[in-house]
Length: 117
Image 1 (cartoon, one colour):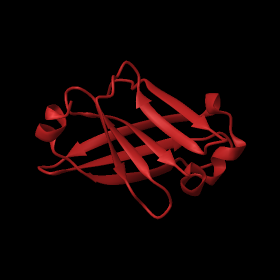
Image 2 (cartoon, helix red, strand yellow):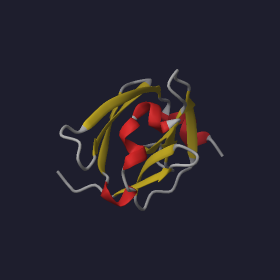
Image 3 (tube, helix red, strand yellow):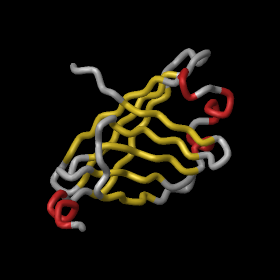
Image 4 (cartoon, one colour):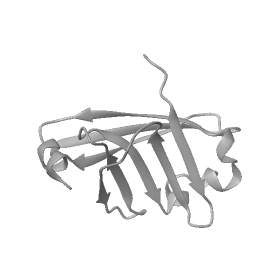
């Protein structure tokens, strides 16, 4: 498996955590509203998912407030279905024994994304 280059950002003041594939240009973003906080899914010009952003991130990852961004390692992968996509992520935080993992199901329509201005 090729090494992923993921840009990791966390704004503690805004409580916004994001994972974006390096070198990607975002064409379209889709908001997924969840009780813990909204998640934004970012799509590139080929209609592929290239990033995820967690609003109210400390409700998803309470450990973030005690970690420097430079110490976080992460990866994510995407599985596509006919009208859905599932984004799986793994975070590796220092001083946390087990990686934090999860997934986000989202509607997916590549044709619609490619048509979006």
